[in-house]
Length: 284
Image 1 (tube, rainbow, N blue to C red):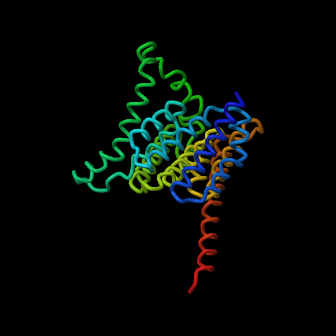
Image 2: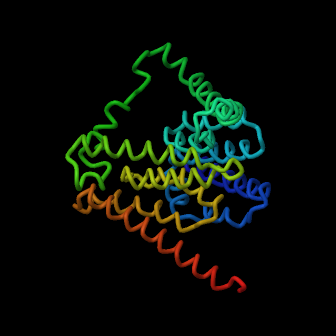
Image 3: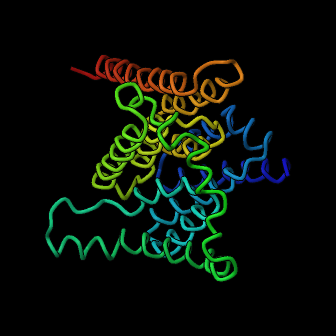
């Protein structure tokens, strides 16, 4: 299994290089995926299936920028079927959403982003239909038990809201904030570079929810490689303190909230530093 997943990680590197070359980016950015410790540890080392979802996401992004919306929808639908989290990338692939309630603008969206979203939903439905027919509602598997076990019932997730709101109120506020971030992302997606909006959405979603499984970041890392702003890898690194917290006797919610806050502060500081450096090199 480890060999297969290492091969998938390698294929993902090649797919990133090809996509970067196609969009006239710097193919050397693929090293942000290929040399990332999280990919080595969680992809090849621990053989998490997330690496397959990451490959499908990269292929879906490549199809989208090539104008192959149906193929993009099938691929992102397959990614979501592999691991639920790529639904965040679908938000960017289906954008940009119209900012006005004008029929013509929504018709234009339906012929572009709407096709990707519709085909993705159909592909996901086709994958799950045989299981629904066979086992009915049990097709959800452990998901109904997973959510409370993982603290989404207000115990540990959405750590920033836990500080000011009790239990389920923190969860409700966290879900609402994620919905608003997704809407903001969907309206500002650049169809020529959908990975940038996807990177911001995935990174902020991880920080807001307080994700504590480092292998989930295998979704974020290829987006960072495509975008080129390596500072967003701080979000991937922030999952490790949260993951190790229970074993070290540290409170999960506080540790996750703190580590993600530090990550976002580092990203903001690096952004300001880079902007100042760029202005200092600009003529005049």
